[in-house]
Image (cartoon, rainbow, N blue to C red):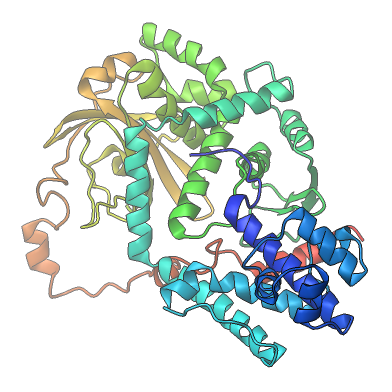
Length: 490
């Protein structure tokens, strides 16, 4: 994981690009003066074959050669070193030359060819358009449900190996907070605005933000657009920090669904690290452990964040700083697991690829039982006996735009002694991961109703479009571009 900002092309690629552009400029200036290749070669005392290699970008001329060529063409050396070609034809040729050196042409088995003068410019443009469309279709094919599940499993394995703690992101959060003089403790909305200003952005709240986005950054004008209508349970700081985190981390357009998921995890992690700074919260958590009074609710209240943010952040710090393995679950009211993390050997249901997300959570697990509780003010605690030992969980139900979700954090029985709520009398038994458990209805019910029922399935709206296409899945780019065009300063 590298949070540093991208610094652009380096090394061989940059040299090839410069050589291509310089070569095209030399050829264009030469033909404009009515000189042949032999004429220019003779004027600079070089063989025509050497001049041809320079003009086609296969050889980068030395400074002394460039000076001689500039004199022969009657121009300054700066005219040869401009970053852009002089005309449309040269620009198209350079773009196609670069494309032929890329992975798409190589994967198709197309050998680079010489672009003859006789080739119509429109034909070159058509080749470039086809190249772009192939790249787009390749991106779409990569975003299949199976590919996404594989990417998610790999990402979860990485998180487990690191105990869900990323030191480089913690350091980046500390660096940003120090830059704006944040003293620790809850991060105010004003401080979030100061972070935006530090990064060169002004905040603008718009009533017509595209429906598929949480925010839109205008990188050209340093403007960050957010919705002017914040949901009743929303946190204005989170939307700002999530948008800025991508800028802090130097994210570029994701090239695969795996990269998209990785960027989302990094963005959410850095946002949590800014809202609940490691240096400030770890001493408080260690003190709570010593007092045997660890509480996700207390963490939520101390930093004025959502329960889900507090639960996520606790998983970042629990194993690394408190030596407590943990698990985390977010479950939709339908019973579907939408987020999961574990490094405490709990056995969650998985598909054949090892993916937890999308599976049905056991009806007897804390994350499902909590929906049946009338008390939504206090947290719900439960011990659950499993085929892999006993686990204790604390859970809450929260509302979202997609309905109710439960958020739960759990630990192995031996670690329960550090937590508030360990004296609960609620107990359950779940063998979901090793036996049929609740995956089938009781035998008497199934016998009575199997042939006498026909449910009309409420199909989730995302089922047939699990992974929308595009570099940013689910985002309508036309809406985004039209929005930016309408709001950009004139």
